[in-house]
Amino acid sequence: MTQNKLAYISGSADASKATIVVGGIHDTYQHFMAWEQDLGASDTLVVGFDHDHRSSSMAEAGHELAQALRDLNEQGINDVTVIAHSMGGLVSKAALDELVASGDAQEFKSIDFHALGTPWGGFAMASFPGAGFFGDMLGYPMTGEMAPGSDFMKGLSQADWPENMSFNVYQGSADNVSLPSVLATHERYDETTGKADLFVTIEGYNHDNYVNAGPDLLKAGWGTEVTSVELARDSAGDRQPDAAREYAAGAETGAPEEREEAIEME
Image (cartoon, rainbow, N blue to C red; front, side, top):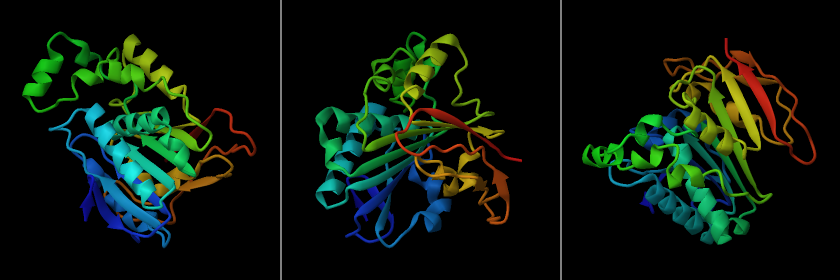
């Protein structure tokens, strides 16, 4: 079942909650299918956002996702979790910023956004003259948007989110795709992640490792004390439920303040 580019994964159509998974370039939502059995619940609809990076810009995909979220809300779903990887985080942030700007975000009880390995600084090479033109020719219409100084990238650091929304960033220390590399990308990265409610550094993780941690990685939310994170799958995708990993706790209760956590994966 696909509706407004939301592809059904599991759960009931009359659920009051929804989890939306958004993949990066080439991956789409299929990147998170290893989490399918862990994300499902009787009161939760799990769907994937089926965007195509070859046919739409990130701004266009973000608008489509924002409309899909509005449609879910009209169906009675007011508690939403968005989990995104890589470029999917940029698309998702644009969608949620649109809901904030239109006032539609206030129609939800809560919206929790978890971005894994997202290149918040953009890519310096996308700033080269003609990069956008050649990107369009090669089937990458988002190329110009990835420049650190593009209107799209600058816009992601502008919105102030209401209290019913949370912005959570997960960054692998060895992720050379999403980590900023030059001054311009550092500045854009810092501006956008400075808006985050939670910043988690995962020691040793590269760009393709996040899915291996399993959804327990996302338990570092506000008001939740987490003392360990289970590495649910190894690099081959095999489940290893007994492999507990140390988690630097320190979750606070009460009004959230920005804080940074570090996870060490052995």
